[in-house]
Image (tube, rainbow, N blue to C red; front, side):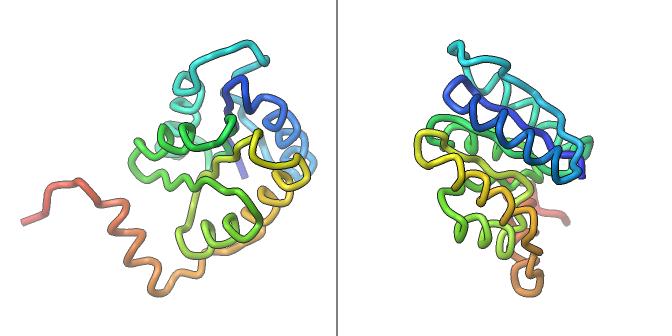
Length: 149
């Protein structure tokens, strides 16, 4: 799978750590930055990563920040991106199982590195449940579009 990763300065260390994990698991990792802990504006890096997922040049994405909230907000501005803020393994499981999250956002200041790794593994290993959830995903993806006649 081709996975986009991106962060701001507050999520840089976990981004680097998760990049190594994803590569070790056999994924093709595309790093959209940032490339240091020097202060930056997260939309400059999260936006291009989310665009890559939205347009299909990446299959999925993982983004990082201090809390992960702003990063998810940026990612979710892109049509067909469903980015969930994950704070534990259960939130990652449900984001994938019920919401078919194709991106997740992790806050480096909110958890230990081992938790972040467990979140990413769980998200990758969990299948979308489909069924009743498919209807809801369609509604998310169509939200804000003019009705068809």
